[in-house]
Length: 202
View 1 (cartoon, rainbow, N blue to C red):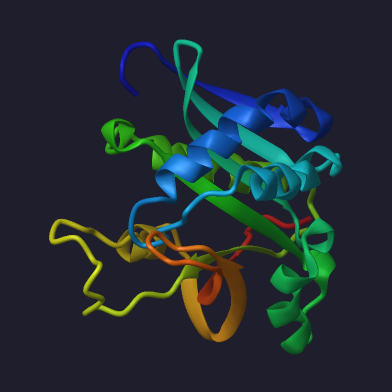
View 2 (tube, rainbow, N blue to C red):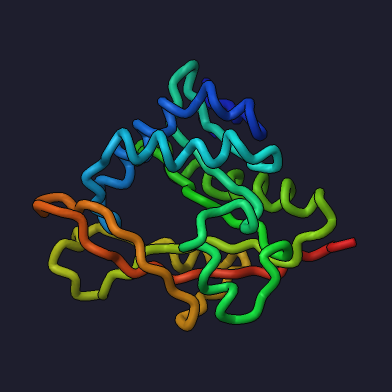
């Protein structure tokens, strides 16, 4: 990491003091392709409250001085919203076996310094420490290769996730609605889950 950068780990109720900063960061980062999210502060506040109410939830922050420049979250899938659980129910998987990773977001100027790996390392270590989870999982939005909104210099994260041991499961999808840049109203977007077996389960 560059000079001045530090990583802060928060759990459960300790996450609350950072909610506003993380909400603003989500709105800023997810505005870019591929999410094209026209952010809603009220939605963000409600969504992030789930983490403060969950003692086993995790927030990993990247700070440059006192400024939040990156954030990554996770919580037991059993504590996540029903939409996130549905694809696992459909496969007959036990919700208690899965630790779900939420966002992993970083301002563009701080990328390429190892923070993406650090976010995954911290979340995987947190899940592993319980000794009960068998999987870590996250969902990513689906966009076609020829999407006209795709920037010429865009690089998908798929190779990074694959190197981390995650496998995309096309049969495990969910639909989430959000307002995209330039749209008048919310539309449903497809997201596909990526899973990795969590080693060293006791």
